[in-house]
Image (cartoon, rainbow, N blue to C red; front, top):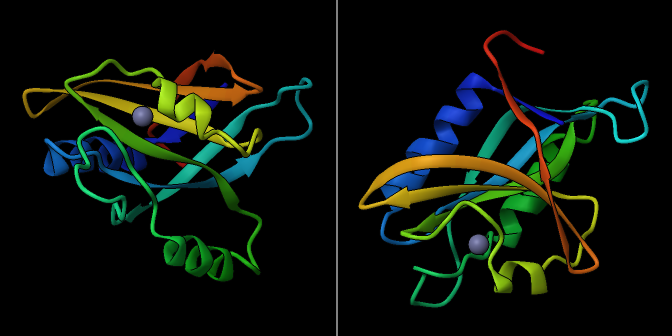
Amino acid sequence: MIVVAAAALRTIVSAAEAHYPDESCGLLIGRRESDGPADGRIVVSEVREGANVAPEPRRERFEIDPRLRLQTMRALADRPETIVGHYHSHPDRPARPSRTDIERAYEPGLIWVITAVAAGRAIETAAFRIERGLVFRLELLVADAPA
Ligand SMILES: [Zn+2]
């Protein structure tokens, strides 16, 4: 299960709409709760919006600026939060990992959040884990207060 702060989810959704018809992307920052069951909760407290640096066309691909990841890791060095995953949008495609996404999922621990955008409006946001070519959908909850 993944719990996303409401403000973070709003950023994800508005970025997905703003970048339409290109894909938007960014990093998910939060904590993994280890005292729960084996696959304990992951709490996403904030997001870092990134430029999509994939070569054109960016309608069906994204690449998060590696500098953003480096900057974010540095900024989090003294904090309990880490990069727990990333988000991107699917313009006029469903909110589930594409074949390309599955092929590029080389970090099994990361959470994938995908927002489907239809004609410029975000219609669904869903979370996944991708491990060894298999896709697992995660329950996504929204937290109004800090979780
Ligand atoms: Zn995708």
